Length: 416
Image (cartoon, rainbow, N blue to C red; front, side, top):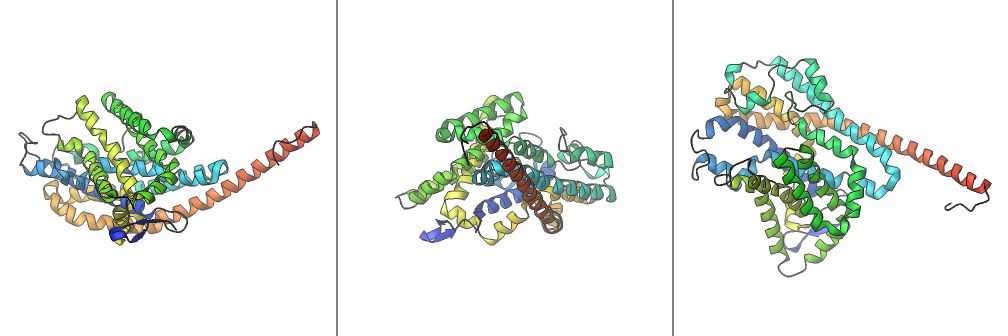
């Protein structure tokens, strides 16, 4: 067990047996819940956003969109936190096991991602086809109408199941899983680059920020999202050193103040582009640069969840931990339910959609976790172990053949 100092100098258990950083689960859970709030915010937008001078300071829309209150509905930004978290936690077992863990990793990782995705598409298809979706229930041209389908043929679900589409109208949150798959497949390249740059992490972070800006300016999604994963991988290869530094820093004068400043700065960086929206119009290069600060803010939050005691303590409490347990299930299932409620109640009743939809989302997420995600996780672990044992047998045979060939040639084997 490893502990970090929490409130009032008391040790906070930040790692469960087996090395799991439990505060990261809490952060993931809160981020998933913020995604739900973001979708309620999107439904409400036609009725809250003024038609003229929408970003004028002092208006209700300005208050919820251009102040730190925006953190409660920063859904797209929360997805970037997911990406940093994946970049950090996905490589950790491989860093411990070495090359022999790769076969098991690929097998288990893809099962872990795809089975819940497929189940979520079945759920979305059933909800969409069974419940009415009258066009008159939503505002014309709204996000609800533009981004979500009102009918769900099997062909649509099948095409989204591969996570290769440009859009996912049946369950639009799947766009982020597309990048999770890309990251998982290319993880060896990420690890090689992170190991090479582990001592030059500051220039590497700056470079990731620059790539993100270029991606936004030229609309290149790979440059927008993949550097965010790399930030997490960079932290993964430096994790032991970072945690050791955090342990030493906690006894230094003003260390807690520095931690609060990093936390506050990270939160502000996440919503900086929104806070500057009244004076900085979206789509300009400067706005894109400010928007890319979200990447750095997400990295800062994850670092605080690893090494800053008060954050570790807060994220390790019961509610964030429960949300973290069901976070993937919540993320996958919440949107089709909310959209069905919007069409059932009308988007003018957006508040009622939120009041009913959020508890329903949480309940369905728990059931989905219990009956879909958890079993798929166990299956992924079993397949991963089988693949690992198979790859180890192949490795042993190849090594034996090489030793035999070298012995036959009269050369001393380089290893035993």
